[in-house]
Length: 214
Image (cartoon, rainbow, N blue to C red; front, side, top):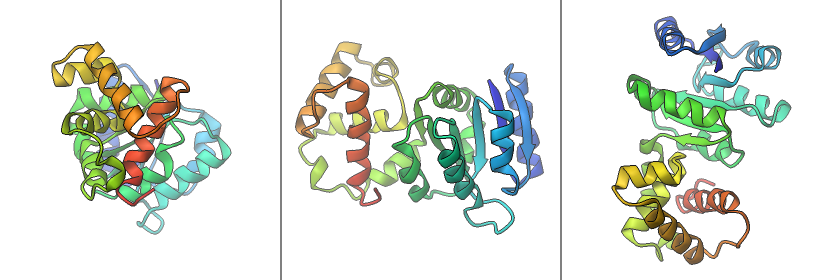
């Protein structure tokens, strides 16, 4: 993958670049702030842009704002937002567009999980940190009440961006069992009978709406 990194901490930025290079990926650009970030993404066309939510110049949500502008100008650009703290509003605003990830920085320390998340996003999928998904689900509302505890667990893993096969592996069940749970979820959430990928997106959006954040 060709990766662009935007992170204000020099230590974290260089560590991330080293991790990616050691894994065989190319770091095409490395920035310490949001200024020039949009132009850098357009210039380098990375496979995925890894962007810190809080960056100079204001150290508020400059990275997230830049990500939204990147998506406005390049709708299909894969983006992974990183955050030191749990902030669900940024994930909700971008997750429905696909090719998007939102991870806590601690996740980078789990190298295999982090690289897997980057590859999923670069391929057009999604990757939400489990902590983010849990926070979105916590104030569960009536939309999700028809789902069983196991179906909620499956939907949570779907929201994180895992494939059916990956979910089966995590839950120690067969792919067919996961497919059965998803069919039940789609039916209970009254999703239409269009393509499965389309229904998966709408299932996740229902999941996010139930937290009152979508």
